[in-house]
Amino acid sequence: MLLSRFLLAVCAIIIPISAWLFAPVDTVILSCLFGWVLLALAVIDFRSLLLPDPLTLAAALLGALMVATTRPNDWLEHLIGGVAGYLVLFLVETVYLRLRGRDGLGRGDAKLLGAIGLWVGWTRLPDVLLLASLTGLLAALTANRLLKKELSASTPVAFGPWLALAGWISWLAGPLLVPSV
Image 1 (cartoon, rainbow, N blue to C red):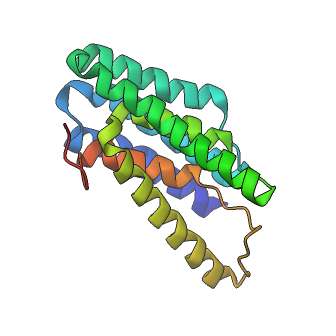
Image 2 (tube, rainbow, N blue to C red):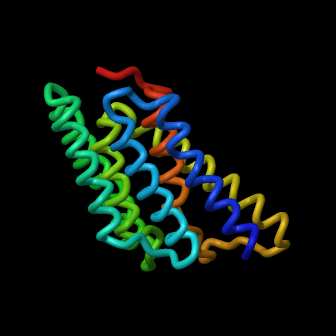
Protein backbone atom coordinates (compact mmCIF):
# COMPACT_ATOMS: atom_id res chain seq x y z
CA MET A 1 0.00 0.00 0.00
CA LEU A 2 2.80 2.40 0.86
CA LEU A 3 4.62 1.58 -2.37
CA SER A 4 1.51 2.25 -4.46
CA ARG A 5 0.97 5.61 -2.75
CA PHE A 6 4.60 6.50 -3.34
CA LEU A 7 4.31 5.59 -7.04
CA LEU A 8 1.12 7.62 -7.31
CA ALA A 9 2.86 10.64 -5.77
CA VAL A 10 5.82 10.25 -8.13
CA CYS A 11 3.49 10.11 -11.14
CA ALA A 12 1.60 13.16 -9.89
CA ILE A 13 4.90 15.05 -9.75
CA ILE A 14 6.13 13.75 -13.11
CA ILE A 15 3.03 15.07 -14.88
CA PRO A 16 3.77 18.81 -14.52
CA ILE A 17 7.48 18.26 -15.15
CA SER A 18 6.83 16.36 -18.37
CA ALA A 19 4.14 18.88 -19.40
CA TRP A 20 6.59 21.73 -18.82
CA LEU A 21 9.29 19.97 -20.84
CA PHE A 22 7.29 18.48 -23.71
CA ALA A 23 3.78 19.96 -24.04
CA PRO A 24 3.23 22.86 -26.42
CA VAL A 25 3.96 26.03 -24.44
CA ASP A 26 0.43 27.40 -24.82
CA THR A 27 -1.06 24.24 -23.30
CA VAL A 28 1.04 23.56 -20.20
CA ILE A 29 -1.66 24.27 -17.61
CA LEU A 30 -4.36 22.38 -19.54
CA SER A 31 -1.86 19.57 -20.14
CA CYS A 32 -1.20 19.25 -16.41
CA LEU A 33 -4.92 19.04 -15.72
CA PHE A 34 -5.32 16.46 -18.49
CA GLY A 35 -2.42 14.43 -17.08
CA TRP A 36 -3.85 14.44 -13.56
CA VAL A 37 -7.29 13.38 -14.84
CA LEU A 38 -5.64 10.56 -16.82
CA LEU A 39 -3.75 9.49 -13.70
CA ALA A 40 -6.94 9.43 -11.64
CA LEU A 41 -8.71 7.41 -14.35
CA ALA A 42 -5.81 4.96 -14.55
CA VAL A 43 -5.76 4.37 -10.80
CA ILE A 44 -9.53 3.95 -10.55
CA ASP A 45 -9.68 1.56 -13.52
CA PHE A 46 -6.74 -0.46 -12.23
CA ARG A 47 -8.45 -0.90 -8.85
CA SER A 48 -12.08 -1.31 -9.92
CA LEU A 49 -12.16 -1.99 -13.69
CA LEU A 50 -14.33 1.12 -14.05
CA LEU A 51 -13.74 4.46 -15.73
CA PRO A 52 -16.07 7.03 -14.11
CA ASP A 53 -18.01 9.12 -16.62
CA PRO A 54 -17.43 12.45 -14.78
CA LEU A 55 -13.65 12.08 -15.04
CA THR A 56 -13.78 10.92 -18.65
CA LEU A 57 -16.04 13.88 -19.42
CA ALA A 58 -13.53 16.17 -17.68
CA ALA A 59 -10.76 14.86 -19.96
CA ALA A 60 -12.97 15.48 -23.00
CA LEU A 61 -13.95 18.98 -21.89
CA LEU A 62 -10.32 19.86 -21.21
CA GLY A 63 -9.52 18.64 -24.73
CA ALA A 64 -12.29 20.75 -26.23
CA LEU A 65 -11.07 23.77 -24.24
CA MET A 66 -7.49 23.16 -25.40
CA VAL A 67 -8.58 23.02 -29.03
CA ALA A 68 -10.83 26.10 -28.71
CA THR A 69 -8.14 28.22 -27.05
CA THR A 70 -4.94 27.06 -28.73
CA ARG A 71 -5.84 25.26 -31.98
CA PRO A 72 -9.09 26.75 -33.29
CA ASN A 73 -8.07 26.15 -36.91
CA ASP A 74 -7.57 22.41 -36.22
CA TRP A 75 -10.94 21.80 -34.56
CA LEU A 76 -12.12 19.38 -37.26
CA GLU A 77 -9.07 17.09 -36.87
CA HIS A 78 -9.63 16.96 -33.11
CA LEU A 79 -13.40 16.53 -33.37
CA ILE A 80 -12.90 13.63 -35.77
CA GLY A 81 -10.34 12.23 -33.30
CA GLY A 82 -12.88 12.32 -30.49
CA VAL A 83 -15.65 10.72 -32.51
CA ALA A 84 -13.38 8.14 -34.19
CA GLY A 85 -11.70 7.22 -30.90
CA TYR A 86 -15.05 6.50 -29.31
CA LEU A 87 -16.46 4.66 -32.32
CA VAL A 88 -13.44 2.40 -32.83
CA LEU A 89 -13.57 0.93 -29.33
CA PHE A 90 -17.38 0.95 -29.28
CA LEU A 91 -17.26 -1.19 -32.43
CA VAL A 92 -14.66 -3.54 -30.92
CA GLU A 93 -16.78 -3.85 -27.76
CA THR A 94 -19.97 -4.56 -29.73
CA VAL A 95 -18.44 -7.05 -32.17
CA TYR A 96 -16.68 -8.94 -29.36
CA LEU A 97 -19.90 -9.17 -27.36
CA ARG A 98 -21.82 -10.49 -30.37
CA LEU A 99 -19.14 -13.00 -31.33
CA ARG A 100 -18.19 -14.25 -27.86
CA GLY A 101 -21.38 -13.63 -25.92
CA ARG A 102 -19.58 -11.80 -23.11
CA ASP A 103 -18.06 -8.41 -22.45
CA GLY A 104 -14.46 -7.98 -23.48
CA LEU A 105 -14.16 -4.22 -23.29
CA GLY A 106 -16.01 -1.64 -21.29
CA ARG A 107 -17.78 1.42 -22.65
CA GLY A 108 -15.54 3.57 -20.47
CA ASP A 109 -12.57 2.58 -22.62
CA ALA A 110 -14.37 3.90 -25.71
CA LYS A 111 -15.22 7.13 -23.91
CA LEU A 112 -11.64 7.53 -22.74
CA LEU A 113 -10.22 7.00 -26.23
CA GLY A 114 -12.74 9.53 -27.50
CA ALA A 115 -11.50 12.06 -24.94
CA ILE A 116 -7.89 11.32 -25.87
CA GLY A 117 -8.82 11.70 -29.54
CA LEU A 118 -9.99 15.24 -28.79
CA TRP A 119 -6.53 15.98 -27.47
CA VAL A 120 -4.36 14.29 -30.08
CA GLY A 121 -6.54 14.38 -33.19
CA TRP A 122 -7.48 11.47 -35.41
CA THR A 123 -4.03 11.02 -36.95
CA ARG A 124 -2.52 9.95 -33.63
CA LEU A 125 -5.18 7.42 -32.67
CA PRO A 126 -3.19 4.53 -34.22
CA ASP A 127 -0.22 5.53 -32.04
CA VAL A 128 -2.40 5.56 -28.92
CA LEU A 129 -4.00 2.19 -29.67
CA LEU A 130 -0.73 0.48 -30.55
CA LEU A 131 1.11 1.82 -27.51
CA ALA A 132 -1.81 1.04 -25.16
CA SER A 133 -2.13 -2.49 -26.50
CA LEU A 134 1.58 -3.22 -26.27
CA THR A 135 2.02 -1.78 -22.77
CA GLY A 136 -1.16 -3.48 -21.53
CA LEU A 137 -0.05 -6.83 -22.92
CA LEU A 138 3.44 -6.44 -21.49
CA ALA A 139 2.02 -5.50 -18.08
CA ALA A 140 -0.39 -8.45 -18.08
CA LEU A 141 2.36 -10.89 -19.03
CA THR A 142 4.74 -9.41 -16.44
CA ALA A 143 2.09 -9.57 -13.70
CA ASN A 144 1.30 -13.14 -14.73
CA ARG A 145 4.94 -14.08 -14.42
CA LEU A 146 5.58 -12.24 -11.14
CA LEU A 147 2.32 -13.27 -9.44
CA LYS A 148 2.42 -16.75 -10.92
CA LYS A 149 -1.25 -16.51 -11.86
CA GLU A 150 -2.56 -18.16 -14.97
CA LEU A 151 -4.02 -15.78 -17.54
CA SER A 152 -7.04 -16.94 -19.47
CA ALA A 153 -9.48 -15.44 -21.95
CA SER A 154 -11.78 -14.63 -19.03
CA THR A 155 -9.15 -12.93 -16.85
CA PRO A 156 -10.19 -9.27 -16.45
CA VAL A 157 -7.46 -6.79 -17.34
CA ALA A 158 -7.91 -3.03 -17.04
CA PHE A 159 -7.23 -1.32 -20.38
CA GLY A 160 -7.84 2.23 -19.14
CA PRO A 161 -4.45 2.67 -17.46
CA TRP A 162 -2.70 1.77 -20.69
CA LEU A 163 -4.95 4.02 -22.77
CA ALA A 164 -4.21 6.85 -20.33
CA LEU A 165 -0.45 6.25 -20.50
CA ALA A 166 -0.49 5.99 -24.29
CA GLY A 167 -2.65 9.12 -24.60
CA TRP A 168 -0.27 11.09 -22.40
CA ILE A 169 2.80 9.91 -24.31
CA SER A 170 1.17 10.60 -27.66
CA TRP A 171 0.10 14.07 -26.54
CA LEU A 172 3.61 14.94 -25.38
CA ALA A 173 5.66 13.12 -28.02
CA GLY A 174 3.64 14.07 -31.08
CA PRO A 175 3.11 11.71 -33.97
CA LEU A 176 4.95 8.43 -33.60
CA LEU A 177 3.65 6.34 -36.52
CA VAL A 178 1.47 8.57 -38.68
CA PRO A 179 2.59 12.15 -39.39
CA SER A 180 0.01 14.82 -38.57
CA VAL A 181 -2.01 16.19 -41.45
